[in-house]
Length: 342
Image 1 (tube, rainbow, N blue to C red):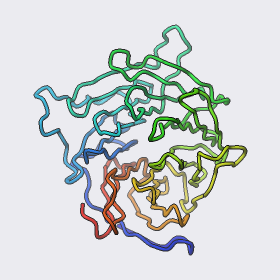
Image 2 (image 1 turned 135 degrees about the vertical axis):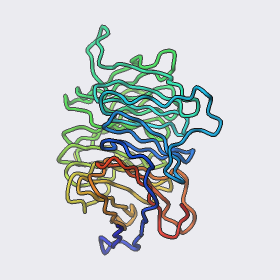
Image 3 (image 1 turned 90 degrees about the vertical axis):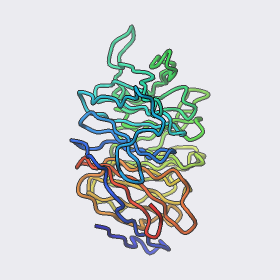
């Protein structure tokens, strides 16, 4: 079930990742998003409309130790859930449905702190949200959708969903993914035509646009220090950008990672910034040594891999850490570096 090999002569190591366990009760359809939280739980969302919380140590359904009697896990939505963003402290989960219903759920209390029907016209041009990202501070969230705009909304329960600003990216092309940087100063927006644009939050303007991909960019991930951005595309490649470098054509692109044989659907960067992680429609997960610019491990899964997430805790010395994945078969899977504890 595990295949680890050296993908390039430039790499200086090869890592083995072992299948630790699966979730106890799979979703009824594809898992479209997973996030390993700071509290060592995993949140997953699915095409079946459900959101679930898991204990990472066992893969069992999870309730907080002191959960109130009225703790409520959100009921399955009529349509699939397509985007997930969990706060850095692991307290809240922001998620979005196929038609653009955005919800903010408190993982500790079980209460729904806000819902916003972005598809409902309210005196302005409607733009249903597709991808959403909660700011590190938790005060706002970003959304992207069909028009190429990036919108900033209030995440305050009293005014949840209220649009604070809208910035046009310069192209009327579908916004596939948006993501706040770890410091909250930037937002990355990827599009169906392969562009990745960076919004400066303070000035509310796009400062960089990267054209490193030939096809739709499905996912982006920030390095922990916010200096690097990795993008995953339907062109079968991942590209690493240094956001401190001004764009211009391919400006800012510092490395390209190849090896997947089909669309790359998801990407993440390890908490120590050393390793990249990608899932693909070729039914594989690859771990990348960012410094060596090469794949150092390949894991074969049973279907298309739609989402991956590193364990946020820094790995022990000599360990590659652990990650979680979700895909076509509805199963959430945990993987750990060989020789590391679960």
